[in-house]
Length: 402
Image (cartoon, rainbow, N blue to C red; front, top):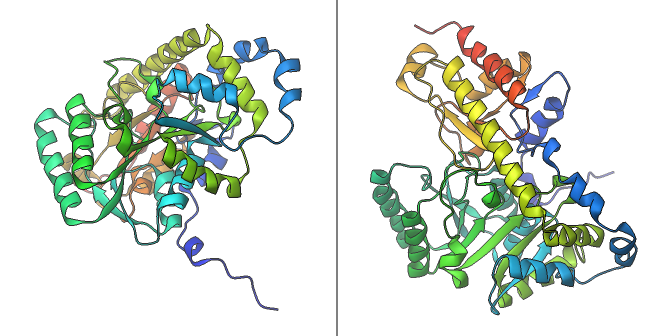
């Protein structure tokens, strides 16, 4: 009997490191900084209980329209201030939104520019689509004096290569937590317009700003050139599996053809619940409490790193989102721990009861240096302090190479 052969495009996929480590990190004895998990204590349970279940559920158990529930679409159009040329397509999370965009517009061999390091789920989606990934250095969370250099590198790539899409997370980047300045947002959209490159703006963390000034989206600056992926997993609940694509109507209609083949439509009871939540006048208060809680947890992690780690370890700053990027690729680390990689350190940390993600998984190719993505939104302030202390012991108890 012959074996069933997988498709060529699937053969290039590797199992997600994050999924592997999360299966271990869910143990009660593990403090987890590994996943991009929201704070369960901050789920809007009270607001969900206020919804009239008799009205929101029974009427939505039949098949529905592929674009989404009409009442929810109207709420989102108003929430995002969409013009008549822009529209919304509901998806099962932002991840499905990215998959649908790639299925609709990307042929094998098409080139997609990304900042490196890059969200792992996006890299996997690009591989499945057969796209060629073209790497750029980070554009967000960098010193002002470096911006011109990075923009010159971006323009050089766009000029020399036939890039179809530029994928960006301008607000609270995953994995680094950095954000674009206003100057960078304006320059990036102008470059994409100049070279005919479409933008995929991934914006799952945009509503989680806890300090600093809110800046326009890339789509605000270049609506005809941009597709926005939005998620409600971070501000409501991941279990709802709800997100949406925002783009020009002609783009939405093309993507909808693919969605009709993929899943017919996104589940309706959750859409009805989300519409009720967003229309509730108390939802904005929920967001404010969520941001304040994440500021506390971010501050706790940032302070704990400064307290427990050697002085040469400097955590990257964030103004929102869920992540701190910890880069140990400095001369002091290389001198003391030459030959040690991030996965080794992550395994040692797990043995001490704390789960972290090595930065190497966010690169499309083998990457030198040691870095980590740390999630601060999931664990309590007390657990954050304990977990960072445990993680710091991994370095303390290693034998230096010198």
